[in-house]
Picture 1 (cartoon, one colour):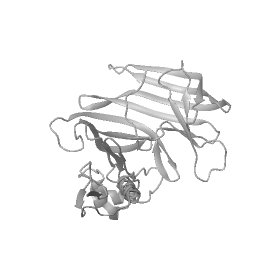
Picture 2: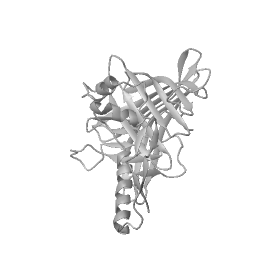
Picture 3: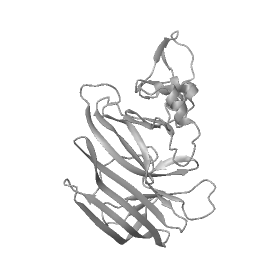
Picture 4: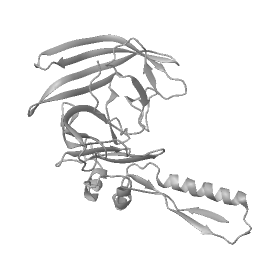
Length: 315
């Protein structure tokens, strides 16, 4: 009779490895099949739990984090610094590590170091295709402006001859929810309106030129159990390749429909495609109002890190 025992899976070098041993028992050994099946289920659950998502881990377990796919250029001192308590509203430090185990192991995360280094590192690896973004940032005009090199291709977070790299710069608004930084969101103002600010850039030779900037105010006009209506005012400015500026005043009503069995609103068809598509209501843990403190523009998922996005503007 052949019995298979499985050791818990260990993730390292952005791969999930499972150690399987075969033990030969004497022929005719008496074994309760139900008990054996239950044992296998428990072991498999332990394997999956071992590769479950992790966020904000302590620096003492950095060797464990390395096995979770953290790029080798990130040291334990950087993790410890980015995980420490922030020192003011301009301190957007964070250390986030996540993974997902399915048909493919996926690993992603974000390290933002505080002053004086102002460095950041984002990575995403799903074995077949990967991307990495490293560089520096600054806080300016209420935005966190990130400048770096975006690398895509097989194993993009490590050296690879098939990589493709391009410079990138983008500005995201930010806020602190339960003392944790979040990016690219609608933030409630004192008057009850929600403010949004974002900026894109293009690289021209050795300089950066603005590409698009949005400054919008969302004021709730109506709400029911199935939808919420905002009066959206503000300005959308675009620059062409000759740096000719085109400014567009925004003054419209935007309806967002509540999705069934989903914690978010989706914009109604027929509205401009550059408006936020999804709105996830979010409040501080000790919120004193029924009205959300924020609306997140993304709800998480594979590759997502608290709204940290660097996609091109939509038209």
